[in-house]
Image (cartoon, rainbow, N blue to C red; front, side):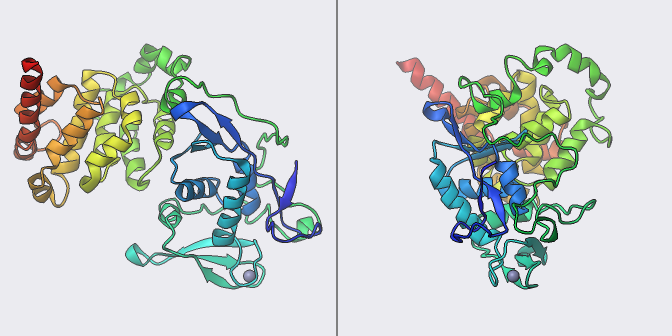
Length: 387
Ligand SMILES: [Zn+2]
């Protein structure tokens, strides 16, 4: 494969640290156009960083959404290869190279806790510990998705002894069936439909073509009040969402697939409860509208999603303040405007109390706060009647 010096500013063909040349492939068109980096895993391996880091870095620098699922690393929008290679240089400078000796044999180490968390680069070559600029937005992502320690093998892929004078060896994953050819590209994603649909495999995925088969498989789990069981996939989803704040839509879909609950309405309870932050939930529903539209496929799904949101609000430590701030109506408005919830379901939610998801008292408080939205709906209806 074509390689390049990890430090592209070093014009020395005997420079030891090499990486594959970053490749790009533009897919889709119109609003759905996106740039796929087919060899992101190989590039990241050469840098001894998870492939999600440089991908997310591109996203933060370009102000673009990124998706990372099923070994596909995608930046929304059309971006030239040269531009992404320049950004990769910036990533390497900020997050890989030792700030002291500029050697790339470093490891990211997180220290401290809570608000005092800090990330620095531990240099294997000179021993320096040099800090990362914690103002960069990628640092939040790194703290949420810390680098995994390779327990089995220690550092490989960038061992000095192994590759004197040669390119780094990309053999970190034992038995991985990699294709070394840089022209190898992953299977094309359909350009029609949303990216989420593509990830869900709409139109071909046996899971979705055979919901009955899947239903049978998890039938014993799909009854009420079993989701506290640690073996329940819904419980596992909740744990995962709790431990992984702010996953991408693609990561959520990948997790649902892994747990075999893509079509399950009860997954929406956990998503409503755990995917969002209480203070920003309305905005986050807008941002995740394509994910929600893909997952919320029936009235039952809508009700489960609302049940999860009810938990999010009612169980928040500052529930009373949140409710007083009008959050319930804002949530309903956002979900209604994004076509996630139907009018009837919203009205039913706002006019009935239920102890299915929270206590009766909590439910009363939350659902009563829907009245602003219900009034708005009424007015909107009478406006259209006038026309
Ligand atoms: Zn160093």
